[in-house]
Length: 272
Image 1 (spheres, one colour):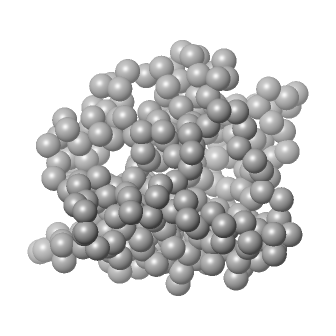
Image 2: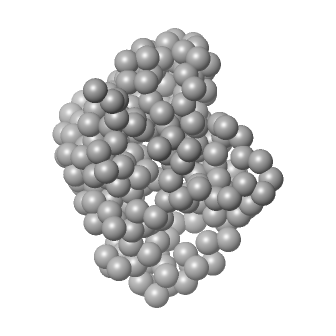
């Protein structure tokens, strides 16, 4: 039998799989591609409904159990073939005391976590791997750590997989702002000293139109109901959501994109 193509997405928390890769995960699953999701942390420092971490009534044990169930629902919506949880303790936002808590993902030695991810890479032999850039897209310590262990695991295994970082075109921010205002949605401003989001157009190596699966992506996000207050995209009308979130952009890291290379419309370009 011919082995099917395999896509592996390495994410930090439950719900991250939906935001930046929900479209490609659903699209490629529908095409018969084997899709593998690796979630690195337990999401313990997410909201417990309307209760924030540190507030009275917030139970990390209850949050972990709830988010595990929500992740399972999201996986089903997206048609993901295999889902793995590394189970590291959620480190919280950059600068929180929880960053340095024993067992937090942020304090876990990269080699240790990479070895566990390497086992999954050897098991599934992905043709394409997707994760975050060195800034974790927006500076979250768990996203940065997911980036680090992914690169280390690929090196450890000698995997020849194509590697992409999820991103967004900076040139799209103006249109994004227009759609947000038209929808009457209040979008939160970044807090603190955070890296600039996204990349310039000439750094985008792939842009996949998954608009036909925008409904799957939205339902995947909605499955994470306990975090709904933080998922501003769910406030958009369906049509606006599809316009904003239907196309997913990536920086191609391996093989490196040469000057003049066309922007791929398929993460498996050259493999099929």
